[in-house]
Amino acid sequence: MKAFIDRLYCMYNFGEERPSAWSSKMQDQSRKAVIVAVCEQEDKRDMGFAMEAMRMPLEALGYQVVGELPVLKTFGKGRVVDNPEVMEEACRLGVLLAKETC
Image (cartoon, rainbow, N blue to C red; front, side):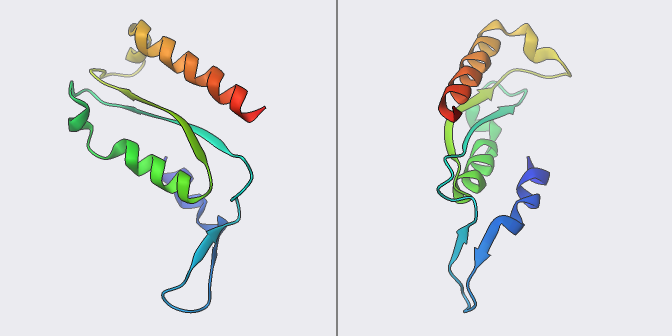
C-alpha cells in the first residue's frame, strides 16, 4: 500500500505560494476503493492506525472508500482462507466495489 501511495504523489496539484493549497488530479472521477488490513492481534485497537493510514491518502486523492475489512487473529501466509466469515465479507466487499464502479 505504501508503494502505491508513494507513486501517486505525482497526481497532486500544488500551488505556488507556501504553505500552498493542493488538489488531486484524480478528484471528481468517481474512484472507489476497499481497504483491508491483516494482523495477528485479537483486538482491532492493537492494529494501530493501519486502516487510517490507507484510508486517508486514498480519500485525499479523491477516492471514496466504500468498505473496510480489518482481519484479526490471522498469522501466516495463506491463512486468511481458513476464516470463512472473513472470506465471505471479502467477497461481499468485492461485489460492492464492482457494483459501485459500474
